[in-house]
Amino acid sequence: MFKNKGSKRISKFFIGGFMVLISACSTPQPTPNLSETVIVPVKTPVPVAETKKYDLGVIGAVEPVYVLPHKIAMPARIDTGAKTSSIDAKNIKLFERDGQEWVSFDIIDRRTKNTYHFEKKLRRKIAIKRINQDENRFVVNMDILFGKKTITEEFTLADREKFEYPVLIGRNILTGRAVVDTSVSNTFY
Image (tube, rainbow, N blue to C red):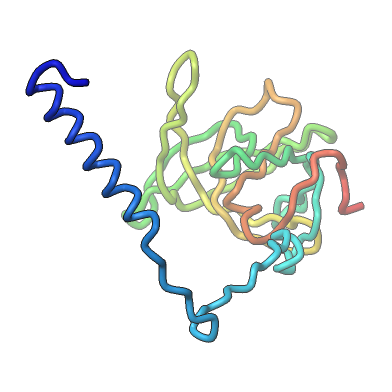
């Protein structure tokens, strides 16, 4: 059957390996003790909206915001992709007060054309990445009435004249406060 010694060795090697494999398969395996088995219950995931009560409830893609203390009514685009909220500001000027940096700026009510002047302590400066060029912005705390909640949060001061909405509400206001349903708008009315 075999023509040389090398072939005999290879055949013995394969036959031996095959026998070890068969004996391993035929070795009886221990039966698990079912009284020691831990059964972990499977929990059906509950949607986030059902697990927590959100102060603002379900809001839409566009909602009214009132800038305090002047109660300037402005439509706001709800943007879950934006980290920080933003507001349309004009005549932005950095100045010093009592050794600290402050910012003066105007907000113009687009409906009435009234101008409201603000002076706020500078919280920080940020760089916004844009396709054409990076933009540096000042960040201040603003007080707004959003739904029935008065909220003090950071807003970047930006020229939003080219945008349809003068205010952008980002995750810094939305997180933990609202669930966004983009199929609706103006849910606060």
